[in-house]
Length: 353
Image 1 (cartoon, rainbow, N blue to C red):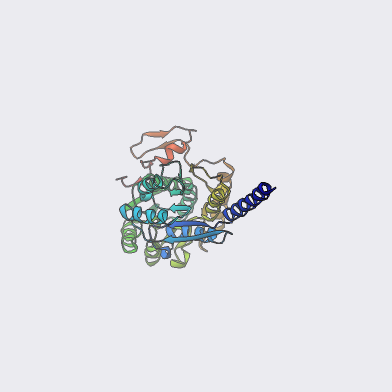
Image 2 (cartoon, rainbow, N blue to C red):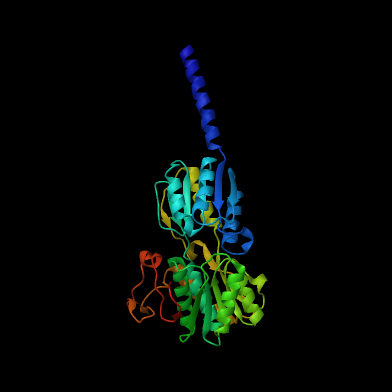
């Protein structure tokens, strides 16, 4: 009888312990490469964090303006030591430091944005931003009179090169003779440098400025010159209301919620995730008042095709700058080919160095 009572007490204690474990608050950390007030890349991720922070049983925090390399390893390691359950590293240069730390903390879930390396407890993710880039290119190509588009770009890595190519393909869809001139800044966030790069493209005859940068500097340069612009990461219309045609934007909330729920439910597994427009991860911001209705309709129709899967951005015939066929007619690039893209298509003026 005494044994039965003790066993009942044991079961009750176990039930309480299990209930506490289920109710345990999940600590989720985010690491950003630039300030969250940049109106760009880190700002977009921050909006996703706020969605996660509103979830029941979840507590989040972040560290902003963390340089890639050794400094990021220090921040990632610090979060892991503090017992964070999930850590999101949102910049390409965090990949190797995060991989190193992940092996030291096997019970922590690590998620790296825009990379390709994994471990048992580290996955990677990005969005098919090239889809939104293509649509933005259609808008830019439709609005250009000089047939010269300018593109202020951060670093010559596949993520950026792929976006430039997609943008160019979209512009060529509506304006076959258009060219896209690229200037590299070799920085993710440097408003002054980005603005000066845009000015150099404007001096070269560009009448629409696009960007793969975190600040609205290129948008401001376009407005000051009296020409058009395409933003990136978030709706940048407030910075250049007379110039801003649209922005290729991120919507990280749905994906971050999905990952955190999987961790809470014990179903998370390390994988490479690449969601797109069909999952509402990427898209376009509202069009500026200067964009004609027929352009909006063309873009809407193409967007519907992309979501339905009937339009694949990188489908041949596509040639590189030297005229070499990279994708034969009717052939669609694989995810591996797109993720490793290091070449420019015909119509892009610039180097991948």
